Image (cartoon, rainbow, N blue to C red; front, top):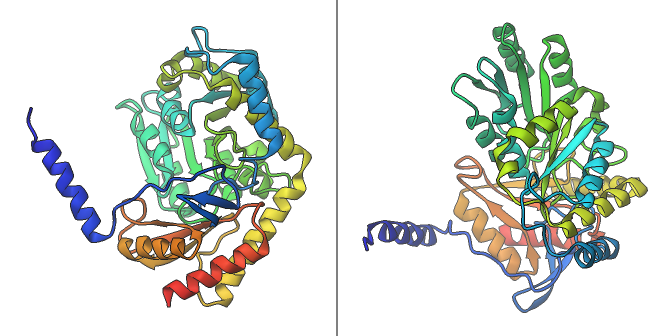
Length: 392
């Protein structure tokens, strides 16, 4: 057996450890919440979770998952088109379509699978895809997976002049797709969707919105970035996840016209070759959507907490990036600095993650605070105070 590859990998890992950029897994001993038990330590404040509405351990969501586990078993042990479709999958997809105001929905094993399986299935030679420069890696990989004849272009982040120029350049293409995140996960800013929809209508383009970090967070009723801007009817295709604000455990989805979802059933490789969602996850997703629709006040309270925390950091001179989402990044510079400060924060009882290259550009490493409806003001005050102390 050749050991050259292993030696190379081990050397790279050792170098990362030496540089202070090695990513160590942390083991949580219990459920996710505003406070967690972490490797024998109690009462650790968690500000790194996507559990924006505090549903990950909500008793009704847990009960729905448990009941489905007892009713349907652990899994279908099959892909959807063979014998992997249960009525709970149909119920979840109907709920997702209703939530987004679309004709149909289709679930995937993850939003990564949804995004990487969408574009190759629906785009043909000559079609043009225009993608925001800061889109999530899953969108980037999904667009790269399209055929050679599909034109793939990137427009400058949230730059409507650049987007319009490219729409004009490709007016004669069979189809044009504008692809954007709703909330950009590393920046915490939101796409200018109202302007994007106006340009799409002007130049006869489709809009594809990945609203993984917007659903349950933005809008009057938590329907996301499109509701925030009042353009729900201007989005042709939504993609998203069950694993963030909906906190069902895992899973992703595409919602839009039935012609889209039916085409994906026929042609989308991640859907064709991945097992169906566990019924416990599908049932938990149904319950989370039900709770979201019943409690729009949770969304409003989350928005208020995120705004308060961002403003409080500013008052301490900590300069978080601007934005309206529940993601509040603080730029620290080098990757090793962000990882070290995150480790120092954990010693102080606050779990927040440091992100560096290649997730963000060199020199723009950051701590990413993620606010949840489950957080109270004392926890947020403490996190801000600990950050200021660690930086000092």
